[in-house]
Length: 249
Ligand code: PEP
Image (cartoon, rainbow, N blue to C red; front, side, top):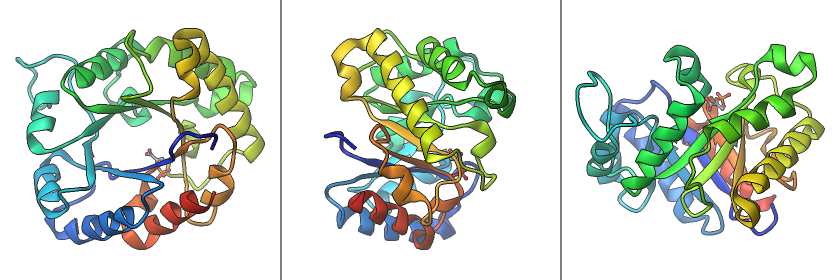
């Protein structure tokens, strides 16, 4: 993983009640015992404040943020609200939001900018559909998506990228190690064109059906700097082996 510090991030999606706080404190304890790996959980907004109270030193983030500072946006959450709740970061551009909420690349870039303005770190997600993968031009399409979603002020001190092939999310299907390697190299090259040498410091995570069984192989790929994990982040029993794999990759 070059000299980039690995980041293992969990995305709880629309899962998690106060009854699940014990999983967060157990994962936080493993994170504290793994100083060479950054560990984070991106949890429902309602759970952020209780989670921060239960595990004050642990990195808790939100799963979305509005691009505006405040205003008439019923049901949305602002960056300042996330910060007030105790979040340190946020995910933007997850494929479920790009699909379900029709978020465009420009919206994703604006959300990332807003989050940065309020002092949040950001994981920006990109990834191709199965149709694009089958058509054979996934690297070209995802690189273009990345460049269009990247805010002007992108830099490695607050932004990480997550490559998440849509067809691999929650399906148990994972690209070959070779395909992951080729995509991450292509994304690194695309980043270099936009942000120059800082591209070599920016983390590019892989996401899509990461588990304790496949994490070591995936995290050993040169340009893979960590993982964004959905289903396997919901319990310490499934998430801890992935943190351990990052420690040993
Ligand atoms: C995700 O939604 O970001 C994800 C990678 O999910 P899963 O690990 O369940 O495929």
